[in-house]
Image (cartoon, rainbow, N blue to C red; front, side):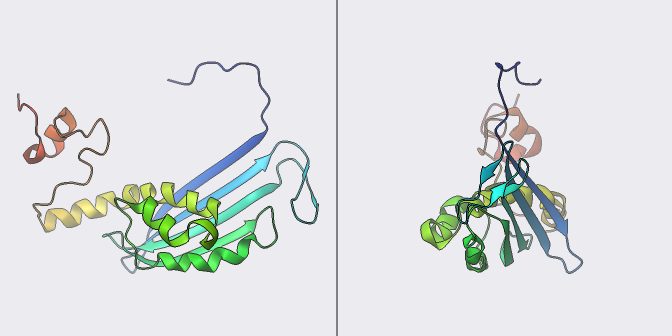
Length: 185
């Protein structure tokens, strides 16, 4: 169902975020994020006053995380292709600090601890959130196959992560009956 019809309005700003997951031939996974911001009107770049035409990117940034099936980050590359200030891209090498971290519970807090404030870039940090979700989505089938081959008594991470996967709900009863906490009938 779509959103309701909006009030009369004029588009001013567009942010696009795209994330993709790739299985590599070496057994690792590349999760790539791309973000772009554009205005629908002419405006000036913050440093240097260079004019930007409608549709010219204000922000255009990319990150590639290379991970394994346990969500351990093996490599990270960040690039700033367009930004409000010419020096914005100078911080991208700092994103190598993500190497050795694991995507999982507390991911947002850990990324802020490592790259928050003046240690990183707000926009590149924002991109890491949907990239983490993409990592889970992209690797799901491969992790399920691995986990079937190596059964575990570890509680599935999805349980209680949202209302559908509440521990006493029908989805948990269907997917993980051993972990279901509600009535079985």
